[in-house]
Length: 447
Image (cartoon, rainbow, N blue to C red; front, side, top):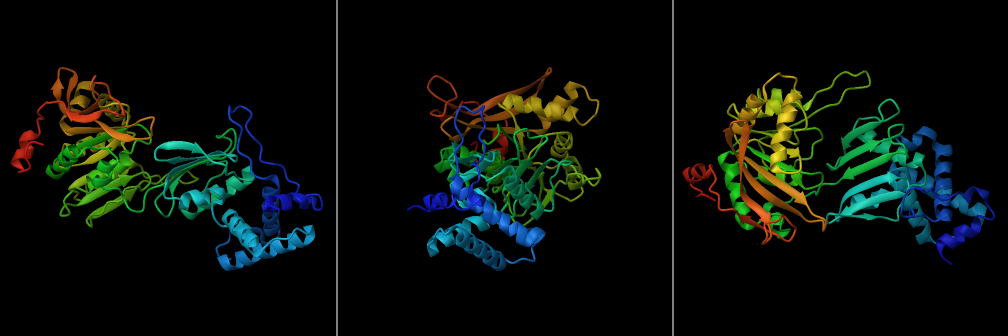
C-alpha cells in the first residue's frame, strides 16, 4: 500500500490528520494542483506538534539542525504510534526530510532552488507554483500547506538578509546568500495571499561563448562587442523583463581590462564581475521610521568621488539617469547600464523621461543633447515565445539633428523579409558606424 493510502486510512482513527486540501482559485481556467490531503495533513500536524513543543525556538538559530532533526523524528514516531500506521525507515527519512524543508528551509520550493535547470520560481498563491526552464514557464504540482506556511517561508528568507516584512511594510526586494533575487509581497497589497518571486543566477556566470552557443549572439557580433567595450564606448543594454539584460551586462563587463577600476551600483547585487579591481555598491531602502534610505542616485553621485574608470549601473529606472549621463559626459567613458524598454528608440525616450524625474527643469533639447553625447551604443535583447533570448538590434546613437536623436542599426535580427523573428539572422545592415575610426585607431579594425 502506498504511503499516502496508509496515511489516508489513518485519518479514520485520528481526526488530527483529517485536514482539507489547500483551497483553489475559482477564477482560474486551470484547476490548481492538489497535494495529497492525507500527506499534507500529516505533515501539517507534525509541524503543529513542533510549534507546540518549541514555540519561538523553532526559528531560533540556537537550535541546531541535528536537534530539529531529532524533534521531527520524534513527532513522526509519536504520531505514528497514535494512528497505528506503519512506516518503513526509508519512508520515515523521506517524511523527515520534507518536514525539515518546511521547518528549516523553503518548503516545496527548496527543490527548485537546488535544480540548476530552473531559472525562476514564481509562487502566485499557496497552490500555484510556476518555474521557468529554458525560458519557458511551466506549472508545478508542488504547493504550500497554507498561507501561514508560505508567509513563514517568506519571513525566513527576508530575515536572513536583515529585512522584515509585515502589514506596515508589506513588500520587500532582497537577495539570497547565493545571489538569487527575491521579491515578496503580502496582504493587504496582495489580494489573494502572499506572493513570492525568486530569480536565480548561475553560480558560474555565463560567458560570451555560452551566448554564442545559445545563439543569443553571433561570433561576428561578439567580437565587435568585445572591441567596443575595450575602447570605452558607453553602452545601454535594453529589453523587456526576463530578456537577459543582466546576463548580457555581466558578459560585456568581462571585457573591461583588468587594469581599470570598476564601480558597480545596484538595487540588489546581481552582477558577477570577475575582475579584482571592483567596488560593489548596493542601495538601501528606508527603515520602519522612514529614515536611512540610500538611493541609486546617491550612490552614482558618490561613485564619482571614488576615482572610477568605469561606472556600471545594474539598472537605470529613475532620476539617477541624469547623474549617469553626466558621468558618461565627464570622462567616465566605457560605462554600461541597462534599461527596461521595447526597442532602441524607446530606450532613448525612457532615458529622457527619467532625467525629467530628477526634478531639474531642463528643456527637452538640452536633455536630448545630453543623451546623444553620452550614449554611443544600444544593445537590444528580446525574448521570443519559444523561450530563446537574442540580440535583435545593435544600434549606434548619433548626434542631435533638430529635435531628434539620430540612430543607425548596425546589426539587426531579421528574416528574408526584414521582419524581426526568432528564426531570423543577426546580420549587418551595411551601415558604417561612426566609431569605426576609433576601432581602427585602437588596432582592432572596423568590426
